[in-house]
Image (cartoon, rainbow, N blue to C red; front, side):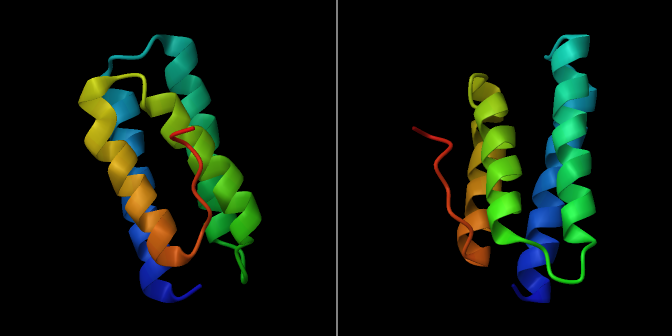
Length: 93
C-alpha cells in the first residue's frame, strides 16, 4: 500500500470521526464508531498495515454509517479510499 492510499484512508476516517462527534448518533453508537476509528488509526501506524484488518474495520465503519442518508457521501469517501488502496469492500451488502 502506498503512502497516498494510506493518507486517503486517514482523511476518510478523520471525516468519520468528525461526523461521529457532530452528532446524529446516540452516545453508545458514537463511542463504537470512535473505537473502530482508533483501531484503523493503530493499523495505519504499523510498518506494513494489514489490508485484511483494514478491510474488516473500514467495512464495519461504513456499515455503521450507511443507515443515515446524510452520511452517504462519507460512506462513498471511505469506499473510494478502500478501492484506491486495493482493499476489499463489502459494506453495501
